[in-house]
Image (cartoon, rainbow, N blue to C red; front, side, top):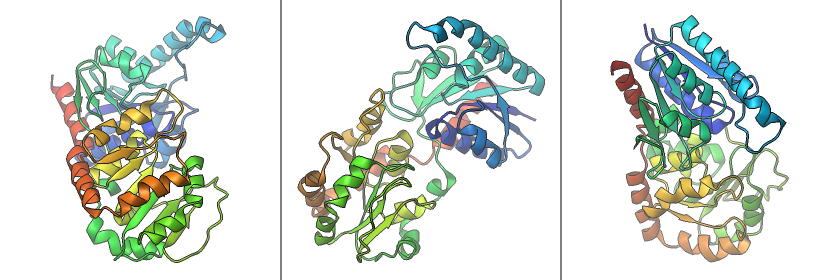
Length: 357
């Protein structure tokens, strides 16, 4: 029996691909022991047990960014975290470690190396995090979601995706999706969303321009986020939702998408062959703009600036695009070329190679 230790977490960007690979490993070998390494504070502390996997705990030890008290304490705290992971590896007879970035990954990489256990790295963002930069130096294999990600010895494997996305037949699901959202399956749909918490900039822009979308002959499915205070105008052709738990149905209905450019979003949208207008979130280290770059370069998407994105942007840029069906079709074809639904299988193949090396 093979024992896998999957390390990562903190945010959905690390947890979701980890869980996709965990599910793939369990499906491939039901007798395998699939364990997850994470922190008590991260999103994994809730999502991993809910999915039926055992969560092994390691201390959360952020890399210091500036000289302060935390930086002084870092060496001892990091050594303690490494020791915790080494104990997990020995106690559970771990055969291979798979890291997805986040606080749990850095000590996992060092511990695996010291225990002479092979490990592989998956980086979901076009701009890699510090843990994966460290791990890629010694990894048996390093996979990245996006072309051009600067990690040593990496290969493009794509993003491990949710099963409902991998198996989605958009054409076959369109009628069901239209009924679910109260829209007409025979008319085109613009899907706008900004993630689970929404995107204030997108919400404000479309609050002042939804009428222009409808006047262009399109319908609008607008997922505002649970914190949004927008009032639903309750007009035919405009479906407003605070939250959607079946995003596969939203994707089935979408002929064009306007959204942020998180790594999972870009990967899912491209894998499904949906053209997009990305409005990268303008904070952090600029990874969202880089995440969208491969789709934009391939002609599958356009990039719009967050700071200047308003209702006028919708009227001046989005509405003319809605009227150019030939361009949308070309973008959709390009998206199918740049995206992949085989990310999970590709990562598992990389793990198998590490085990057999």
